[in-house]
Image (tube, rainbow, N blue to C red):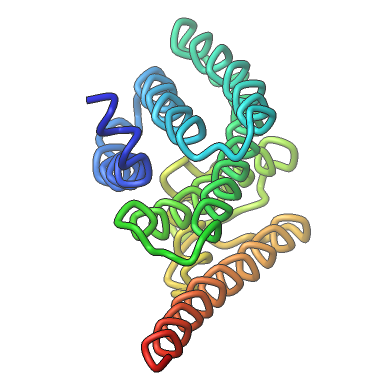
Length: 220
């Protein structure tokens, strides 16, 4: 099992993230359930960081971010309190951004496209979406009322609502009923828009470049 995870780390991460999108709504009202589920996500993410590391130094970055985040989430799971949520979310956001960068380096490391690299395309997208959702959690904690929605507009937005906002922003579909209303929150959303456009442009340009390279090689 571990050898398969090391061979296909991106596929494991991508499957876990997609499963979370479907399973988490059933755990939305349980703070402890969310904390435990986040710990599971960090464990999977840690395996991916170890598998795609470029050097031992980069691996330590993942460990230094993931270990305190896991400890904070475990404390939340035991106490049932969300008081530490902004701090754990900040660490998780940094860890997810780091892992997304590691996967991008992994995908661009050579001129061959493996099956795992194809899964890495989707896994990187979900990592960035998760990372921005955690950033929105922190933003909401620092500046309450940063986000509003059609339902219960004055309440704090839930994790699933902010994740939905992140996915719709990153994919440029613009279908979210969750809206940033504070200037700083709108700035964060604009950064995610740029990240989404840049990521799509990078993936498309890489595929086109590899296609042209293969065509040139076959002509020779």
